[in-house]
Amino acid sequence: MTTEPAFRWRSVAFGVFLPSLLFSTGEGAIIPVIPLVARDLGASLAIAGVIASMLMVGELVGDIPSGWIVSRVGERTAMVGASFVAAAGLVLALVARTPLVLGTGIGLVGLATTVFVLARHAFITVFAPLSHRARALSTLGGMQRLGYFFGPFVSAAVIHLTGWTSAAFIVHIVGCVAVAVFLLVTPDPVNRLPGGEERIERVMRAESAGLFGTIWRSRGVLARVGSGAMLVSAVRASRQVILPLWALSIGLNETSTALIIGIAGAVDFTLFYAGGQIMDRFGRMFTVVPSMIGLGLGFLALSLTHELSGRTAWFIALAIVVSLANGIGAGILMTLGADLADRSNPAPFLGAWRFTTDAGAAAAPLLVSGITAVVSLSLAVGVVGGLGLLGAAILARNVPRFTPHGGTRVTT
Image (cartoon, rainbow, N blue to C red; front, top):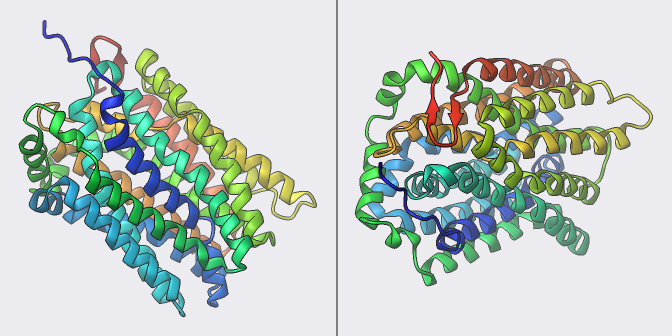
């Protein structure tokens, strides 16, 4: 029996987790204000939702070339380049005078985000032993949540000081530049991996070849588990659009919106490691199913509060509820993808898995915008709640069964 190598958290803290924290802090700063900036440019509530969803649409489009890009230029160069592409998109959003230009800039940020995230997921999948995989990936997800916690507070302070909503984009620009500088001056943990650069390059080249072919070859597991994971991603992405849109629709100002979403982000962040421990000790189902039930019920309840006299208090309370539900499932999509991938060559399946989940993340906010335009935001939020409960049912049937020493087994 082969003994797995010892896993040292310090070996990935600075090269993996800290850049992710810096980048996501900037992303967290802009998410609450995108619909507000769109409104200031003359967009309707539905169009503001479309513009906010361009972040996820950009990520979906970026899934196609990201493996090829990383394999051609290398992991570190790709991440530095992605930081500057994101900064360029943010500058475009900063100077936008029409909703179309704003949406284009946000789409560029989403595309760059995919390249940034890709290599770190594959690296952790290869680097972390099975006994620590869920905690490592949950911590990676937790860095994103920590950034989403810090970001809105930073943007709220900047907006309050400047009186300029678009100043939030400057926060992300600073974060992107900081990430690029940090990556250029610190050692890369890839070099500590046996076979380091060559191994990651081989993984990335495998991902860049035949994305749609891999999706077809993996259609069975993607239909069973991937469909549920797509709904997880859809509901989570909808949350990032719904909360700012709801705040806008009930008349909250920019600073209040950022503060409320920041508080919700803090609640979300506190549970990321607990979720990873539960997954490693008891199995993936014990986080993903409760998470989806909580998200589903939380959105269904929110959909009924728009016309209530205490709608602001209900919004705060239910934003915290859905954040609690989301937090307990931190890292679940990355962990399930890693469980199902070939350990010796995970990237092809991870690319297909991420494309599948990102398709849900891109489609759901557009669905929210469409229903809002045709009927109402309340109905759109209720539909998302129903999708959450449907996802819980699918995953309860099909999620891989996990044992701490025996790995995972996909249900047939």
